[in-house]
Length: 283
Ligand code: ADE
Image 1: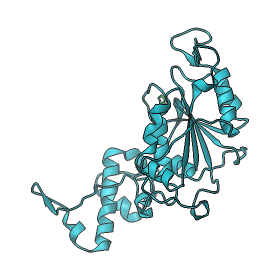
Image 2 (image 1 turned 180 degrees about the horizontal axis):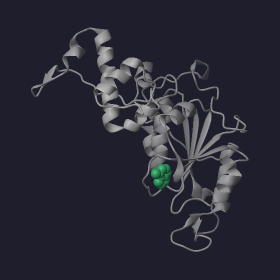
Image 3 (image 1 turned 120 degrees about the horizontal axis):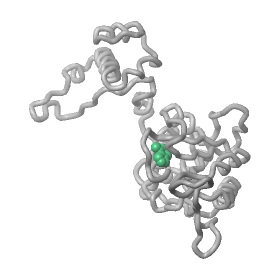
Image 4 (image 1 turned 180 degrees about the vertical axis):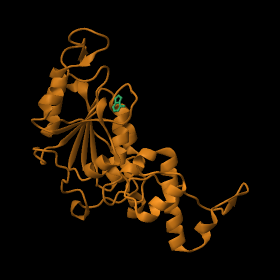
């Protein structure tokens, strides 16, 4: 996968070089380019924003800066700086050894699925979900446009549909200063699902949200810690009982913390019976 990020704070994206994403870069499964938006700004002061049309507070990012930046990035003409992994100890894989980087399973209505995906983080966007992360983990090329201030002139987003499949996305109902932190969140959620990036496939098959439920609690050694014991079933060696217990913990936690998720979760008879025993009603 190729990720490009356009921002006025390129150094903000440095965490992408670390941990799991650094590993994906080192493995050759991911490459990341970070582009300073000011490279497309004109004049001595290189302004990237201007007062909102119609008046009001704040500043709006200029279309004549963003437009050429997104054109160049889509066409592969933008140099930017290539992020090296902060984990240089892993072996590089040849391109033909990579799995899961080709193919593009995300199709919007009437869109050309060969176009790169442009993600514009904004509190006014559609909520980003695990389903999006799963779909976008199959993309070949994702471009992030980080807005600041009062956002980006809307014509940039509208015009970008000629070169991109565009999604405006929010990471939650709160307002950040800009899109950079949202990019870190979305990129991490997406990249960890690229096949081969996480060592153990089961660890994301059992993620919270992957079956519409929250994951239950986890434990590890020592068996007793500060007088607190690991639930006995987990040390019983009985895999059937362990699976049943985990399912029930997951159902219980979801009921307590995110009951609305149960409406769309895939629940069998036993799940419903267990939940009803906790006072849940399906209506
Ligand atoms: N930019 C500012 N706030 C944001 C949010 N909640 N989600 C995504 N991008 C943002």
